[in-house]
Figure (cartoon, rainbow, N blue to C red):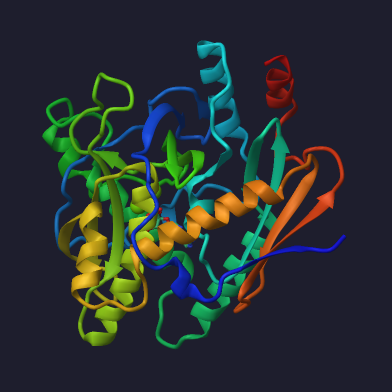
Length: 363
Ligand code: A3P
Ligand code: MG
Ligand code: MG
């Protein structure tokens, strides 16, 4: 079967005023508990409480309670949460596309390989698990090749350690001073998560996205869908020179996309020294990132281009994927095009669970 192709070039055509973007509104949430078991509630929500500077982010690496990533989780938890919401409402959600937030974030990534499935006018997108694992290994290999660097596993740990140092499990005032002061002694785990499920839109496409939110500043508003003071936590190397500044600005694009898609208004960046000592905190308003980048004359990215690209691509995708079965979306490294082709004529290729299909058939 011939592939169907979306041309990225010339990138300039995505310039100009951005397409309308809806404010993401949370309509459901779920948690993974400390064993990474699914719970249809907000039990793993954490509150932000500033960490102590000078902490060693490597501390406790030997005790890291790491989630086993060798299991492909597909969209399972997101589908469970959507089905539960639909049962409550008595109707299906109106999204054209359902996926994890991170899959949209990689829309302009260097390589891209995801599977999709269409049921009743809704496209379900998951990343290609084998491809993702392969890419990660390649990335780790590259990092290992650089002399004088810490292991990629340790550097990944720094990110989770920063979260452990910056969060408390209940609002401030309900947690003892002792607990807060002892955070540096706590075992770091990445098994528990709070995930927000939002309705949002880019251009003419309505999206349902699920994604992890690191913490909250104060409390969830009582009114469903009202703006929430979510916090995204990030670590980054201290900026020591122009090259460091360029790297950070490039990272800001990733931070912006990640937070913008779920409606996370604030990012707390923990700057660390080369050897993983937390040296500085900076609070960045997500909404200010595009403007800041433009003012500084950052040429590597432009928020409007991202939005317009996503808008046009998603619309094209909806027109192209017009039949059941499993499809693949692929962009080869450096290629100016994105290809779409069908890989299975029928079925759901594990993208959808039987439970979800059986539920949706009734609607
Ligand atoms: P940092 O982002 O501070 O490096 P998130 O920021 O999305 O909440 O993710 C938390 C941490 O998970 C990251 O902290 C990083 O350590 C790790 N992580 C997330 N995505 C990763 C990826 N693609 N490769 C390696 N580590 C990743
Ligand atoms: Mg996170
Ligand atoms: Mg984070």
